[in-house]
Length: 253
Ligand SMILES: [Zn+2]
Ligand SMILES: [Zn+2]
Image (cartoon, rainbow, N blue to C red; front, side, top):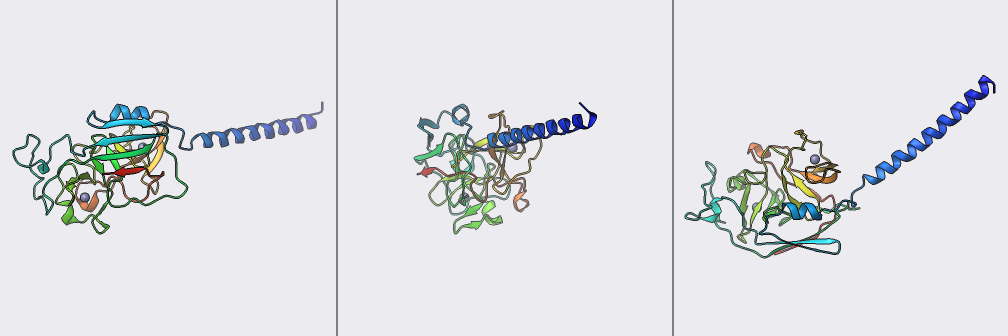
């Protein structure tokens, strides 16, 4: 075979190789799509025993009374779990909390939604101790303001008019400057503290999450992070604002 012919064969083989490699890359991209990771084991391993877990078909139901397993002034003076407010903070008109019958049903293999529904006022998820997670809004659907922030305890939480204790932000008992699992949102995706397990603050998409490994999902899953923004310079960091990445399940109370 002449040198010229060898060169043509060589170019041909290179073209085939590049073709195969391109196909391989496409396949990899497809396997990165969400909806193929089960959250059942992570849910069972992380929720405290006071939260009842039931799996059924393709969904998981979590039931709790919504009361925190940690100190807060909202237990009331005299309770073993009572502690004072942070300096300068105090309750507003909503001074106490009570038990509820919360039930959150989420997909066991959460998937990206085709259209992303906005989170609204009320529970958008459940922390691993059964306390509801709220977004960055208060009554009237207005963003949390500095006055409302002064009703928070050390956990970035307070009760609303329904005596419904809930987390809006990071805090001492959920997550500070770390990679802790906080809970799961109503679309079935987990939410973590501000950091990844590598210690880095990840770059997040418009839903406040990204796909990658976590301590509970070493092979990777889409997950949210608390926003890495010191909210109104308060030292609190909003857990979740904006739209869901996946399709939300039900949350009844
Ligand atoms: Zn609130
Ligand atoms: Zn992450």
